[in-house]
Length: 191
Image 1 (cartoon, rainbow, N blue to C red):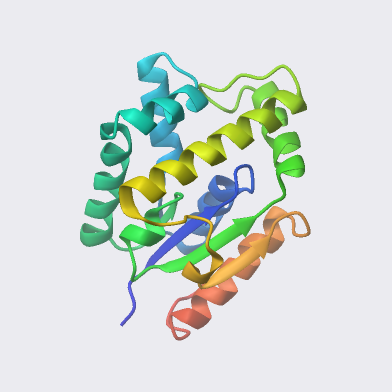
Image 2 (cartoon, rainbow, N blue to C red; image 1 turned 135 degrees about the vertical axis):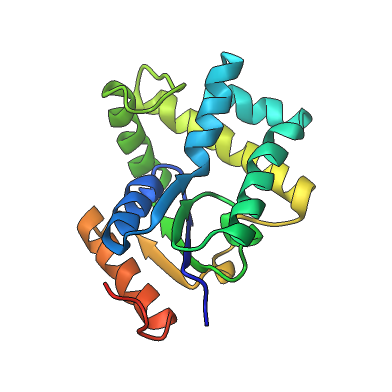
């Protein structure tokens, strides 16, 4: 029987955390966000998320701290929804979803979150600032994950489901994930 484990990856600002929280709530599963953990690490270091991403290119222990926790969770837990860039890699038996969003729309969404102060350790003065930060973060993550693990976290072949969140609101994305997860589990999950 397949594990009751969902990993949600995706583009920056695509709605990974919101989707994962809503899916976990609908299923009665626990939610974990490696992005929140990374933001906590950045805050503890007194750095922005972007600065911590750049630091992680040299200080491998930053990524290892997050990835080791994900690996443990994949082995020890069930009934779990994780939003993370690499959880799919550490949890190959999970149902793997990827949320797509173009970078311009992502910058707009993230900037709104920054204005509402709902993003810890992130600052920006404009959508253009966020767009530039997205580019730098994306390049840093691609470089690090390739060097550390020889993986491309945006290769869509690695996922059971891909959803463009530009054309789907949160309710629609959650509905699609739940429907496809239920089918993947062989209709053994109540939704």
